[in-house]
Amino acid sequence: MKGERKGTMSRKQECTLEIMEVSTGNRTVLGQFDRVIEAPNWTRDGKALIYNSEGLLYRFELETRTSSCIDTDFANQCNNDHVLSADGRMLAISHFEKETAVSKIYILPIEGGIPRCITPKGPSYLHGWSPDKKELAYCAEREGIYDVYTISADGGSEKRLTYTAGLDDGPEYDPKGERIWFNSSRSGLMQIWSMNRDGSDQRQITNIEMNCWFPHVSPEGDRVVYLTYRLDELKPEEHLPDKHVQLRIMDIDGKNDMMLAEFMGGQGTINVNSWSPDGKYIAYVVY
Image (cartoon, rainbow, N blue to C red):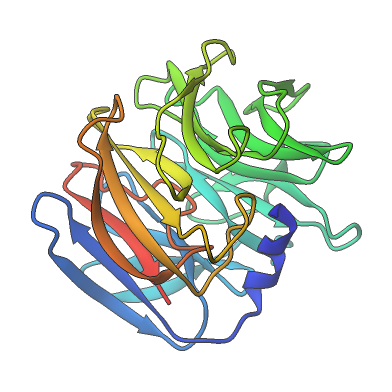
């Protein structure tokens, strides 16, 4: 479940940061790490990746293949839920408060600074920032139920978009900001869904015998990359690391679904959108 995310920050193991050219399937290892790194975002200029490790955020320069820590001030318990604003100037993060050990969402400048709290309630796990920069989408637990919510990027009252049994998670806006993509276990398995930005017209996109997580729409808006788990390894609502996973891709309407790669991964592999700005590559983590 969502609370498992906190445990990934201190897990010790080796992993690799990779990119794949989607058109060819060619994989390139950018770096090897003797600790857990998770959830690479591509910066808007295409020059770097943002990832989290051991509670902190890092910038990985693609040209030099070196990492530098981003100053997040008091926010030193960041998890694998972080996204960039459409103009690339701001970074939104999920951070576990020291006093309550509850995840809340914050915003700070991309170069670092003092985070500003956006969600007064927790647990709240960030996944999407609308292209117009006005709104954040996230998964939140309220009274024991995990659903999709949105909130103004300036803070304020949150809006609940899903009301079904099971777990609704991973909400992310399409490039036009018209629909939100997410994963839901309401059908019995975790599958990919989409809905209008206001929560209307909720549609199931995938219907396969795997548990499907974290849909990411390409910059052109025509393809979706997502992660799958085997049915025999996890319950539908679980998304743990160190499992046999597939990176898959499909058209925006769910057609032409195919596997891109299979490896050991899971929690932290592609929790957030990791398409390159030109839509040619995706970044991900292998354990």
